Amino acid sequence: MSEMLTANTFESFRVYSLDTNARLREALQLCDDVKRQRVPQAALEPIVEELNWSFGKDSAAKELADREIESLSKNLKGKGFSVELMVSHIRLILKLISQAYKEKLETLILAGFDHQSRKIEIRKLAGFYCSHLINLGYSRRHILSVVDDFFFSQDIQRIGRSTLSKFFREFDGKEKRFIVLSAVTRDLGSYLRRLGYTIRPLEDLEPEQIETLQQNPSHENLPAVLEVQMSHLDPHGAMDACYQLLSAQRAIAYLDPYGMAVEWGNTMHVTRLRAQHGVAIAKGDFLSARKRSKTAKPTVRSKSISNYARSITENFDSASTERLLSSIRTAALARSSGSPENQLISLWSAVEVLLSEPKDEARIVHYTSLITPCVVSRHTRRQVNAVYEGLLIGHRTRFSRILRSMPDYKETQGYRAFSQLMFLPEHADRRSTLAGILKNNPLALHRVWKLQNDYKDVKSANRTISDHADRVRWQIHRVYRARNQLVHAGRMPSYLESIILNLAEYYRSSIATIVNRAKQEDGKSDIDQIVAEIGIKYGIFRNAFDGRSTDALSEGQVAMLMDWL
Image 1 (cartoon, helix red, strand yellow):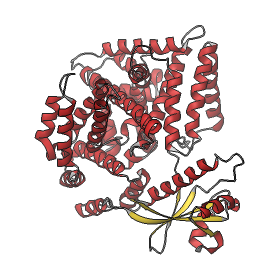
Image 2 (cartoon, one colour):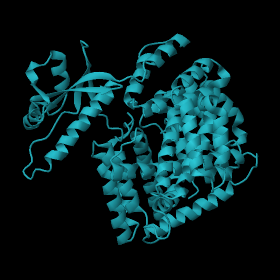
Image 3 (cartoon, rainbow, N blue to C red):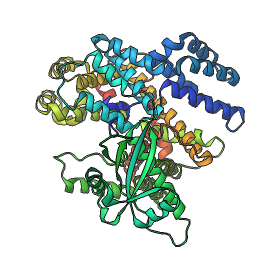
Image 4 (tube, one colour):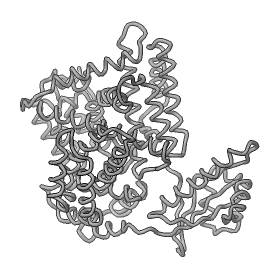
């Protein structure tokens, strides 16, 4: 759970954006748009595909409404299904699972967490459970902090049912009342006081509260303190609600042609109503860069970024360079904004600037068909590298010794050598040795097993490639719907943070794929032609793994998986 909830975890290791319950509600909302003729019925296709995938993975939903789910799946086969019948089925299934879903997930986890043979099933259940909590309204950072408090803050010899049950009771779904203190400028304090908010001088606070607010770098310029009561599921959510309140007031202040000093501290003090002590909570930046490793040299990183910038500006014709830089500047607005709404809108706008304009097809279908190959092209290599780097952290010496024992290590090295170790049948003994090294690290052992199982033969590789492409396609459709909800209806979905994380990663991966493809050309490249060629190459790549063969991968196929473009 800790890894699933960490923002900079590799995309395939992160928690699902939606659980089955949330997917059903999303489908219901889209069905309403179809009936109102706001969108064509074809827009339901990715929703139907993802629902079927979710039903197949979610044993809690199946136990609560197995026959109803089977009936829905049967009626959704084919493109001419009845939207009315789909809506009726979804409403019935929601009646059966909505109230009992969380408890059923907990029951299944408690029933199987200590069975060695059910580890994969428990991981799936944990993924749906984390996603369900987020879609209920719990903050990702709060869930992660509770996980750390229960399972990582102190040595635990054994986790029993009582510990897990106590952990589950932390998420009772009931809103609590919190007092949030935020340091603001004098002008902003005066403005908020006129609106009826409670404003206090900093010196009137308790020492603990003063210490928290003085953690803000510009606290000397923030002499006033906003005290506001918020109802929320957790303290992080209460702090975010206060931040959004202040952001809204700042936006209103911008309407004044003369303006005023509108600033507040990102670190706030949050206390449960009538509690003696509170906590300091800083505004989280889940789009922040990954922490640099201790061995990373700033000069080397600077050189790498400089080379990348040169590749962007020197490999495209003038019109493509201008469009590429405009897209990158638009995406950068997401990094400089504290508003998740602005982050999503900026990132999606960057995607639209990057790609060609649609002509005879729906916008989302056009953009999805172009960007999906750019995103998925580097997935296997990134998955291998994520596991490889994770193993280096805790097992560098013995892990490196296994890699160096490979006959072709000098020619391949690094994560490419690791891909051969994982995928080629002649390295089975070395994989067994690695499993022995990792026997006391269940997460690392699972990562290695999952990676090898995903590509153990041609059939498995084909399924893994196809499944990831489907998930990316579904997410891009979801991003587009969420963006439209924000722009046209002002609705902010509960899973907004999750899809922003995914979209940011998709965007970075797409830019890298496009730039690397352009570097292979002798002259200046046209960005639309490059994107089209990536799509063609991806189709050729898929054909190479299109089959049901259970033959192990060859060295040439492994090389293609790692670098087919």
